[in-house]
Image (cartoon, rainbow, N blue to C red; front, top):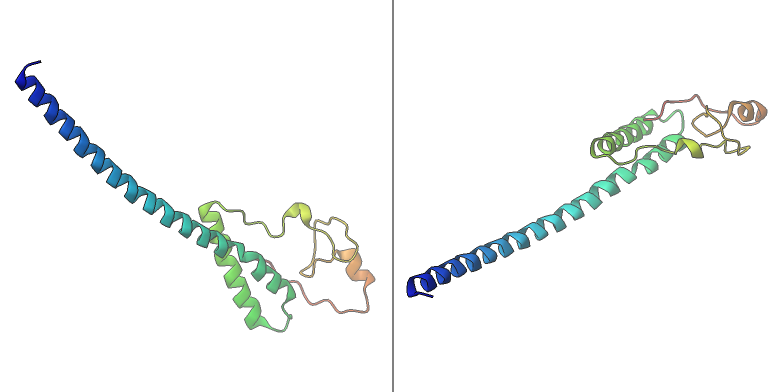
Length: 135
């Protein structure tokens, strides 16, 4: 091996070592960014998961309390829209789990208190408020 060839190999080795150090630095920055994004994703998922709480509040809201109803609607709608945008589930409750709270039968059409029309008619002792649409 000649001296020029040896010098050329040493220079190539030095360049490779510098590139490795640069890539390690980039990797450390990428790992930190990934950790930041994972924390942000957990916050977004938590925000979207709160939709169930707001929908529960909608179902439990007194019919004469329009101010709270519209506030809960806005919160639920914002979380539904964000869930759809980022690809998170938006169903509340899941359609397969929709059951009448009185008889337990799976029903397609439920009022805001999760009662089927048959149970509403049978329960004449309680007054059922008018139904509002869910967000």
